Image 1 (tube, rainbow, N blue to C red):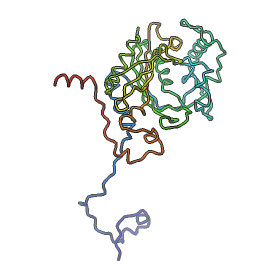
Image 2: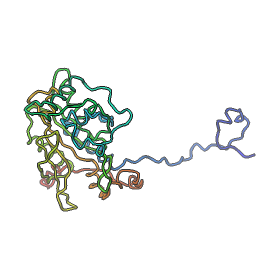
Image 3: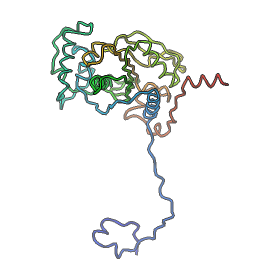
Image 4: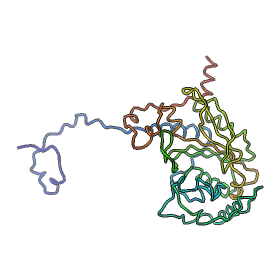
Length: 324
């Protein structure tokens, strides 16, 4: 009689297990090797960035909501409703539900007035602000949509405004043509500091501190334009492998037209900077095509064999070299 190797549900249901001969069990044998999971290179770099930013005193923002209203994604940032970035060829709009349910009504009215008539030293955009446009749902194009909500809460919290440092690392979506360096979805690293009487020097110093902690010491800043920051700067870093300067981020000081409707004190300034997570990951792991890093074409073997991500703090390295 062939002995059974397993006790099955059918045996238990029918009671056949009572008369079925079973093979003896060897409780000392070693079982099958359990295959563990592997962290994707992006997650390894993300974890390292989180650790660095927390060491610098930043608190992580909640970024688990990918769908945002146009109000938080664009209008609250003082980005006009006629801006090209708000067209369907640049932004993914949601069909169902197509519109958000609500936004803070008093804040909405202040934002509307800032767009239409101006304030805080600005004449505004001088156009008719449309509610239906502000209420459109979309896949967020930047994590600054979360930053604007955090700053609004910071201005209206119990006890009033208190200086804060926030950061986020999460996914954003843009309707872009995909190639070796661009995807329709990618990860944005963003940091901001809200405090009294901050200056451009504070912004540059904060950026330099962060990049030194990931081993980049040679930085250059170039004036740029952003709808919601003034002044604005592009950040360039020297790439030792490519032997050239490459753009690695963007930065600026949030405009008064954005901060005033939130209810922040007049002398509060907010400095902010951001970069993609994919670019430093590609440099770290020597990946030339972004589609080999993120998406359906990624080889699983690359994820299994990717080494631990470690960034050497340039300041610490310099101190150790001096000591030697």
